[in-house]
Image 1 (spheres, one colour):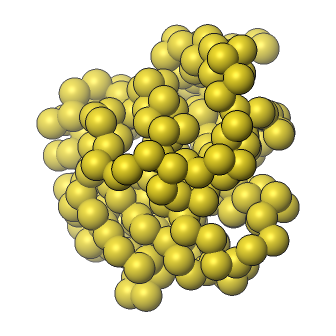
Image 2: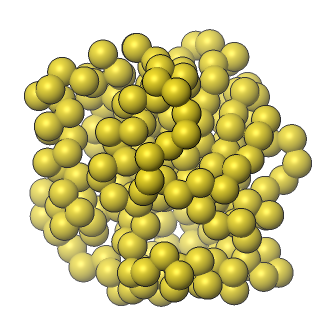
Length: 208
């Protein structure tokens, strides 16, 4: 896995503290600029993840958590594929405020770096796209994702290529596999933000 320099590709990648990042999102969402930039930059991760989840789930009524839903781009892609039972959570209220109506059944302000409020074995599937990136959510969140996912449920997520090793996602994924907590169904490099030359690891796993 060759590592290329990605930390300078997008301004928010240079921020580390939660306060800095939240303030950045506050400015970035003004005038819907965030969504405009995602179009200009050709942000393909939401489409890729929704398509991958759909490959392994034929039931359109499954209960999905879109963890780190941002402005709702993954939810929109899931809606196009027929999924409607989606809960969205994010740590930026400014991002949540950009979400179109009727994309999600519920929206909530939640920090994914903390213990999640949901009971064990609650969701049929989890998507987490664009959230495992610089200064955002750490690898330990995967432990919580497994806890709140039902047996044989699906966890579909991206990891920015620049933080995969530095944030120890490689070790966490391997540990969960060796502990027989999940089965990796697919794990491949995929397009992410094409016009910024940033790729991501795209993974889908099944909880055991």
